[in-house]
Amino acid sequence: MAVVSSYESVMVISNKLGEEAIAQMIEKFKSLIEQHATLESVDEWGARRLAYPINKETEGYYVLFNFKGAAEFPAELDRRYKITDGVLRSLIVKKDEE
Image (cartoon, rainbow, N blue to C red; front, side, top):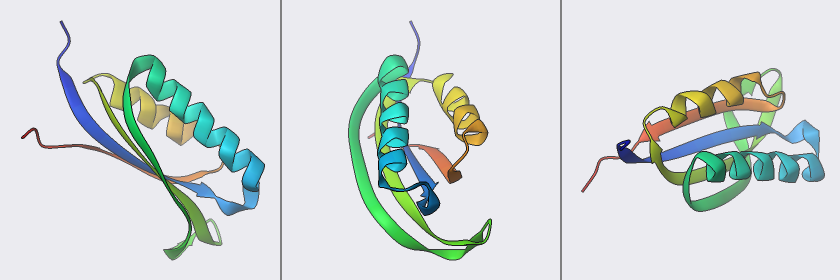
């Protein structure tokens, strides 16, 4: 049996995509996580100013995913973030088990 751990992932989506495309991208990653792990929550922080410009953009749309899954899945999720146009930055962190 695979070891299940808790993770949180933040992704910053380009605001240039528009509201509809941002909503579609969030839904795409939500369904991807649900296919491979147990999605616990999705927290949309919304549009925020970036600490520094990324690709000449000063604002991004932040989304936080909390999920539990096998140790192999975060690497695949990170790969998908990197090849998806419109994702400015992403971070996946394994949470400490209490």
